Amino acid sequence: MLAVLRHRTYRHLLAAQVVALAGTGLATVALSLLAYDLAGTDASAVLGTALALKMTAYIGIAPVIGTLADRVPRRALLVASDLIRAAAALALPFVTQVWQIYALILLLQAASAAFTPTFQATIPDVLPDERDYTRALSLSRLAYDLENLCSPALAAGLLTFLSSERLFAGTALGFLASAALVLSVVLPRPRPVERVGGLWAKASFGTRLVLATPRLRALLALDLAVAAGGAMVLVNTVVLVRDTLGRSAGDVSLALGAYGAGSMLVALLLPRVLDRIRERAVMLPAAFALTAVLALLALAPALGPPSGPSAARPGPATADWAWPALLAAWLLLGAAGSAVLTPAGRIVRRSARAADLPAVFAARFSLSHGCWLLAYPLAGWTAARAGLTASAAVLTGVALLAALTAVRLWPRTGPDALEHVHPELAPDHPHLAGADRRHAHDFRIDSLHSRGVTARPASGRNAA
Image (tube, rainbow, N blue to C red; front, top):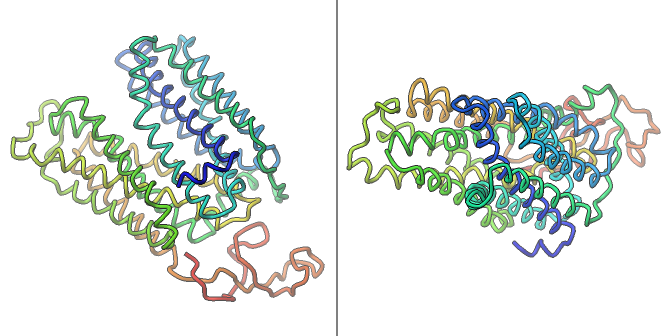
């Protein structure tokens, strides 16, 4: 898998992603401490609002950036995003009001909403070979998981001899290093695309393309299934470990580490698997496996009644098996989520023209975070009001519905090329050069091929 690092441009881009992610992880810890310094016992509300702003930026800004990605040099856009994030991180230690935190977080996350989809859309051009691209997706997944696992430990180590304000300086250094690494390589030029309509039509193009393509709609449903499993882990782990199982704070990190370890293990194994079988045969079973784990959690007696300070602690017999069972469940949820998310880029790449990839990656970035925005409060509110069993049951229902929807939307077989007709085009239109009005080619939704195009198969090859 590491052979892909022979590509200098990709190697520098991956390093840029890693150091930027490390900076983001440090910022998360430092922001928590800053919120506590400013708001005291209301720090949770401040952080909750900050995370909501993060999701709002991701959902609202990414599609707009997608309209610019084919007109602005990618290197300039990536570097500008890093510089804006560095400036926002450097300004955070100087805030004195909670609203200032919100403004800077919105700025920082808006820049991230510009950086990430642009980065994702650049990698397919840097690595045109599908095997190389698959390995790049796995390395990217590993980078995200390592950031989740290592950033808290790195922050804890730095806090032994640095003040919490200095962590923001570490964040800024990460973004500046990312910008320098991007500047050190030459990136492919974006392909200009002329699209009709105003700003809204152009900003919504990627979303419309996703919703018009069956396997991309299926991918969105799978994103919702992963969000349901991830929300159970990220929202409810602390309550499960501390209150329900009565274990130490350090065990919370172990449980989250098991989730990350499962994700990394699958990311390492997937390139070889995808050399032999198609994505559909991996991703759909993984979604149902995730659903099964959530269902077992909903039925587990260890979750018991609504938890809280007054809830009874589990007895010795329950505790003997509950803790390893929880670690195994979190490992499986991480593995299943990674099996869905890691190959997703291959599906996006296959479903759009190269010129449309920035818009499509931006749209998927936005829509997938919309799934998390739904799953996070659903997991938290049901756990707080009805208990962890109810939370697991509700999330099981969401994941099952999403997995079944994905199966229905993603056909097992179908044509790669469709024979279709363009009655709306003039005979001398460039698209019809050397062809009749009725012709066949690799069919992807774009400005000339909408969901309403009259089409029939020209071949019977596997479309998965």
